[in-house]
Length: 407
Image (cartoon, rainbow, N blue to C red; front, top):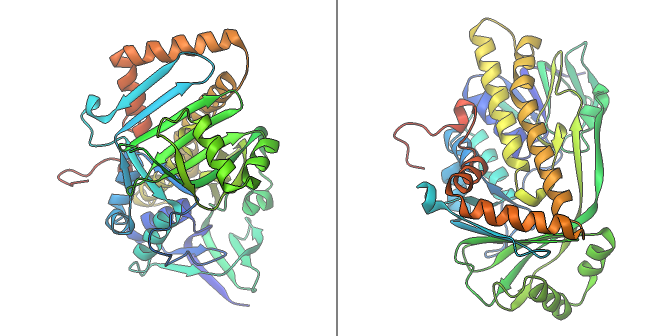
């Protein structure tokens, strides 16, 4: 039996797990990263991944401070400067413009595979990180501080981190419950070509059945996220292309003109989920393993990256105080720092979903008044933008722009 020793073992090499590995590896921690498959390294020119994320300024800062942002920029990132939101059930509308708060953009639309690949490329230059792929965890032994892989190797570490997604096997092995509920919505995602210019603007229309979002990419196309009932999304995913384009054009109220083309479509179920505990002695949960959120505001990955940056900060400060990785005092600090913020965001998105996804005329009136009021009060409008960008509240060092650095 092969036993390998590390300071930290991370199960899951997606965006959040890879960011945490880079953050710790750059600080000299010995890190073992377990991932079921190597990230995609090449793809056809002009192809847009079905899975994209709207990365906030805080996430951009994290990627920059980890050295990954220039790689991501080389692979393509798509800044957007404005956002238009309107409600199908009322006259409510609100606009956001980065110029109003003196920022160059409101964030970047980035393919998930671009973020993951840039982080993996960064890890290749960090000697203290060892990656295990393709590999899967078979057994977790918290008392023995070890993770056994399916191939028989045992990874021993003071801290094991679950960054293995919403249905986290590690969370299950640890016996940590996650409460939540499935929404009565799935999401159709695809890349579409509109006749009109998206003007680097993200567009979102709230419908009684769920939101429809257009996220702009550089060549004039948009990535769409169309949320509706499971039955309706199944129907939409199977429609002939011409009919799908016709219905999408109509549902978007032709805000970008006629939708001319659509690439492959996929459907993903939506749910809210939150782990009752983020930590146990020698174990921490980050990202979707700790919390899953409705995608209507695009905050899921941003929350996970803040988890990773905060956990890294707590571990570095604990080591500076003479403690080993996995000390429960440092893990509790991480949990206190992130749990309240994550719960607040989950609750806010759940409230938005329930407020907008219904046919109640009184709620429609309230929505319209609220959106129009927020649009006309600069202080409120600016606050929403700064909050979405991750520029407000307590932030870990990695999420703060480095002095003199051009982002």
